[in-house]
Image (cartoon, rainbow, N blue to C red; front, side, top):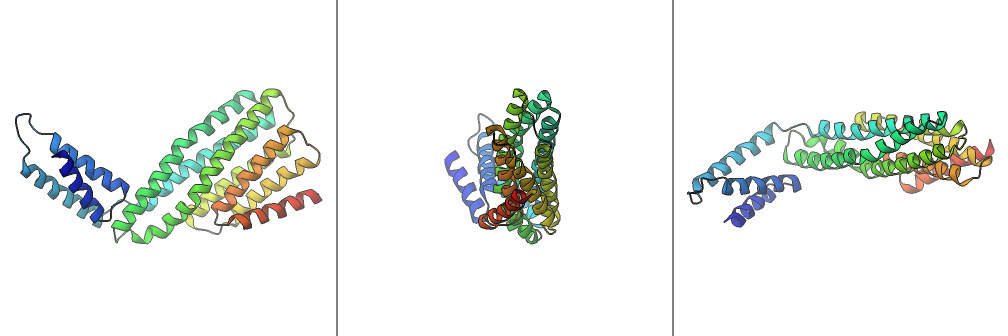
Length: 271
């Protein structure tokens, strides 16, 4: 009985064009309808009909007055980007001051951003579903698509920032002397992330985010003229990788992002 009811509920959700979220909710609701009955009562078809009526009303209300998927996705993305800015600023400060506790705290924070990334991914999925089902929210699809296109690259930027934070922690722990341009390049990355958030939310021109990202790569690359030790090379590499991720998040393809990066590196080698 439970299997049949769950199957019918999931089939109905799919018929309405529902995504994973709606199908799962339909299945859970169906299980509750069947299971939550008095122990001495057999399955009551009336309860099932009541549940169908309630579900129809809920779908109708959500169809006409849905939650704003645009705001849902924006909020989730901003939580990721805000945390990323905090980590980058903390990494820069720890490199500048040789502050080991601050460097360790930045590394710890970088690991916790994964939860926000998962929330962002779920918000994009739910946003698409809401926008597709409701004609009053369908106009938000293009904006959600912008966030979706940037999402994978933002996740890579988070991963590269974590590696950068780990490298900074190891450098500070060893007592390595960080040239001033290294923390400055990390701060350039933080500015690029701030500009990326503005670009995504307001759909403004992405030039500010790209300019800060390339400045970070250029400033970091200049370090390789005088320092060739492994620790510095690793940190420079991570700054450059994060810069590429930010460039890709603004809509550049891989070839264009790498070409822009190489141009910045060329300028750095001429200084």
